[in-house]
Each structure stands twice: as C-alpha cells, then as structure tokens.
Image (cartoon, rainbow, N blue to C red; front, side, top):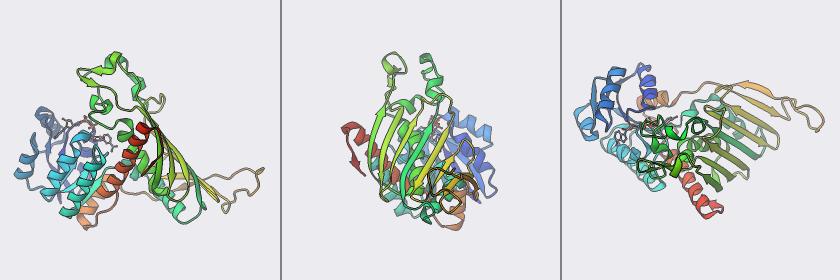
Length: 353
Ligand SMILES: NC(=O)c1ccc[n+]([C@@H]2O[C@H](COP(=O)([O-])OP(=O)(O)OC[C@H]3O[C@@H](n4cnc5c(N)ncnc54)[C@H](O)[C@@H]3O)[C@@H](O)[C@H]2O)c1
C-alpha cells in the first residue's frame, strides 16, 4: 500500500484525489496547501485524515511513501526537491519547473535520491499516442516529412474583462508572466510532449508568442496579465521532418482539443482527442492507399491498446521499482524546448535546442 500526500489543494488536486482514491493500492493520508482553510476543506471533501499548511511539518509528521505536487508552477521545484531529499517518490504536475535551470536541479535531486520521479503529462493516457510512436518507429509511415499539432482551449474568450479578478476560476497566476510560463508552459507543454514522443526530438525552433489585452491596462490588483496567450512554433526534428505546432486559449468553440497529424513518405496518421483517446486514423501505400493521385485515399480507423494514466503509472512504478517514463528527465527535456521558444520569440530568430 502506498501512503500518499497531495501537496496543493486547488482545482487540479481534485483530479488527483479522485484518481488516487480509485486505486486500490494507494491511500491518501494527508494534504497540504499554504492556504490552510483550503487544505482543511479539501481534506473534508476527500476524506483525507490530516491536513497541513507547511511542507516540513507534512514530511516529518507522516509515514509517507509518496507525494503528488499539484501547486502552482513556481513552487514545483522547491517542493519537489524537499520531497526527494526526504526520500519520497514524487509525481509532479507539469510544467516540471519555471525554467530550465530549476528543471535541471530537479533531475539532479531525483538522480541523487534514486526514488520514483514522474511528471503528469496527462495525455500520455492516450493509447493512440503509443500506437503512433509504434507506427513511426516501425517505418510504416516511411521517412517522416511533416508534422502538425495543436492544442486549443476557449477559456480566455469566455470571460469578460470584469471577470479577471482575484476570484478568477483558473487563477490569475496562469496568465501572469511573473508567475507562470503562460499558455505555452501550461498547455503547450502537453503538446510538445505529445508531438515529440512519437516523432522524436526537436533540434531547432522558431516561435511567436502573443499576449492580448484582457482588462484595461492588463493588470488586476498589481498582477500583470501579460503571459503569452497564444504560441505558434515552426520546428525542425532530429529525423529531418519539419512541423508546425500551435496553442491558444482564444479558440472559441474548443473546450480542450488536441490534434496531431504525422505525414511520412509512405503514409500518414492523425489523432483527434476530441473524438477518441484510444483510436487513430491511418493511411499508407501498403494498406490499400493509392499510388497515383487520382484514386481516393483509404483512411482506416485503428483501435489502440489502452495505456495507464499518470496516476496508475506512478503507483505501478513505485510497486515495481521501475521508474517508467515520462520522468523528471523527460520533463526537463520539454522545459529546454520551452526555453528555446522563449529565446526565439524574444530574439525573433531560429534557436537550436
Ligand atoms: N496535468 C494536467 O492536465 C493539469 C491540469 C490542470 C492543472 N495542472 C497543473 O496543476 C498545478 C495546479 O494547478 P491548479 O489549476 O490546481 O491551480 P490552483 O491555483 O487552482 O491551485 C494551486 C494550489 O497550490 C497552492 N500552493 C501554491 N504554492 C504552494 C506551496 N508552496 N505549498 C503548498 N501549496 C501551495 C495554492 O494555494 C493553490 O491552492 C499547476 O502546476 C498546473 O499546471 C495540470
């Protein structure tokens, strides 16, 4: 049985509590939030016996095996290193850190501790993504030439200027440069993992980041709402392919849409998570696709093997002792790509990553 604490008891922590409570080999024994009344209410809601507002107290007062870090991004590094140094297995929310330097420190601390360390790239729960990787690796698409990926959300377009106050449901920290890495770091981070997992690493990037005005003066209670809302990336992959990846929170009509298309010399695949996490569409010259340009292409739906979600994978890893991916090292790799995007956007040029 894994005794687990949830650190951070905001919106996303409910997803952790729900998922971990449903696993029979895990018990949530404590929770912690700098906002103690919030931690108390969360503990009551999820039937968690103990709550804290201090990480040191949490770590010393409990026989914990593991911690899930679900706090706002700028505290991940500090909290994860505390937990790792105390010998606890850690599942950390994305993005791994606020910058590349912090991410490297987290990887070092994880290596030193030797415990299980994973990052919550939630869309790794898509069986279609693993099937896509297998189709690329096996050569069934031929040499990969072109990639298109998008992650679209609508929520910035759903709020009037007066809604951007301290009660803003998604947290003002998400849209402030000082407190987060904006849409790119919040949801773009998922897209970067989603696209590079099957296609392989990006070697260079050219990125545009844009922040649009949300309130007059774009500031609420001293918090500037200046983080990027939209990101458009041109990328070159190590395997020679090129791609275009984009993400925005101004995509009216999309609650949470992720799409990926991969085209190779012999075939193509496409994933649309709005339709299904565990199937993809596939088309190649061997599967009856045409070799001439006049005949129709035969796209076929492939049902894919289901894969564990981040919570199941974390507990499985603790039980087996094998640190399954995505781990902190993978989180840091993606953080490096995000850093390259920021540098490119600032300098207005291609950046080698
Ligand atoms: N994997 C996913 O799909 C997914 C989805 C949503 C959010 N997230 C991530 O989860 C994290 C939390 O997001 P959220 O939407 O719940 O934010 P939130 O603002 O609703 O909650 C964050 C909580 O962390 C607490 N906190 C901040 N610093 C702390 C510290 N040092 N110690 C203890 N508690 C602290 C805050 O008081 C707050 O209650 C973020 O990193 C976000 O990127 C991931």
